[in-house]
Image (cartoon, one colour):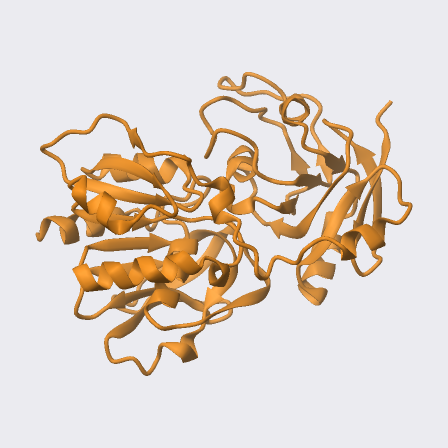
Length: 361
């Protein structure tokens, strides 16, 4: 019989349910994701490192898991929360159950709680430290001793430890150096499909090292944690500007780019996590439905007076900055995930735009 489990937040809020998958305890920042599918991609996205993710869709696990729908080499979330776990799964690609997947990775999960109530609480109070516990004793004290997300450089902890090539390096295709702050596999796949040779580097790699390898452009990846804590990112962007290297950043990479260009970042109350965020392209007037996963944002006020920086995209829900570009240099970024996975493919064109920028088309 499944063990009784509790999701407890730092403000003392308590949600009772049962453990499914691995029966253990964990602490992290509790956030919610509004995607209806794609739970395996969510679980393996390095941007969720250090977080307990609650899915708002009421039934999770019905199509199982498989070795193809992964965004990294392991589950990255600290814990997983669902309303109802589907104990049976059916899909021609499935190779196992979600519960066994979590057991194998020793990731605690809880089902049977009111995820609607939890989501409304987070929207009201903001993202909070929380934990999945089997024993409620001293839970809040343990949570309050856990570090806040602000000030944490989590990117260095999920970055690769040595360079590697994604696919075959074809000298007829321009080489892109990817800074791995927690890069998703589908980003690398789309860069390759867009006509690039792709080489991935640890997050602290000197820019000169990548340029000596023959890179024609730089990609700043997504990742977890507080962008302001990634101090080495500012120096990297200054080097990119000095060398005028074509550069594309997304998510954490976008925030790091904003900081390196002289802007500021701040923590959102509860962030944007889901596959249905409306974003307006200010350059074309078109609206894209985007996939997003971030808890920090670039401060518009800190960049709006810089004559060399242009805000290119905004979030139509809360008007936060979703994209920017340098007017004189081949540098641009977006806050959302143009590779989606899961999510709509409205923004795939950005990879083609980057290819044209690198090749001078």
